[in-house]
Image (cartoon, rainbow, N blue to C red; front, side):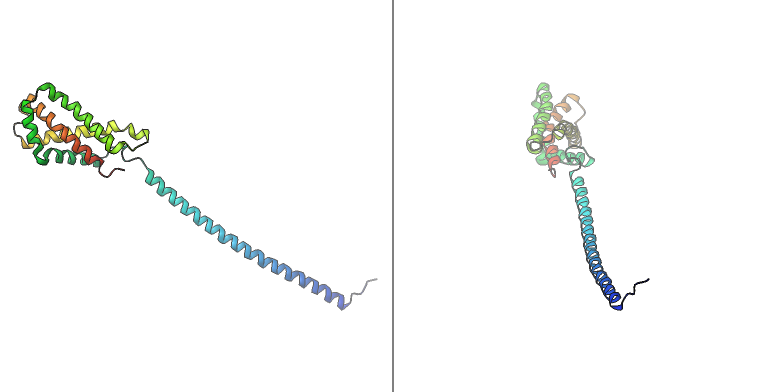
Length: 197
């Protein structure tokens, strides 16, 4: 025989089911709220990560190769302008031509390595001294040689332009170039260091 269930029992069971459903609905809303908060936090973290990536890329681009480790056309141009200004300023080439008349060939020959050495000392003392990176310091001779060659060329061009007899007699031209090279090297090294960090 089947047991009869009273309406009160059914009503109590329905009330119990409704109470459990309300609790479940409250928990579901609470979980949805927490899920939404987690989604917001996740989006914020993703945004933060993308910002960090951007900053990392900016830092990498700023840290790129040290400006003293490569020789660019701009560096050559700056060296040429500096050497030109050094030689032409106050008509230095004119005094170089005068000094070359009483300078011996041996002394003129000593001026070439002396100019190179002074250029190296000047560059180290004013630009490379603060550099701690050994890779950059090893590049100093390369940079110095480039500037020395540029200074020699500019000194020769200025002498050729302002002194019509330059180049006619090799011995005299050699001495004249030696006397003007020192100031050309200093001008080229000075111009090269402008704008370097």
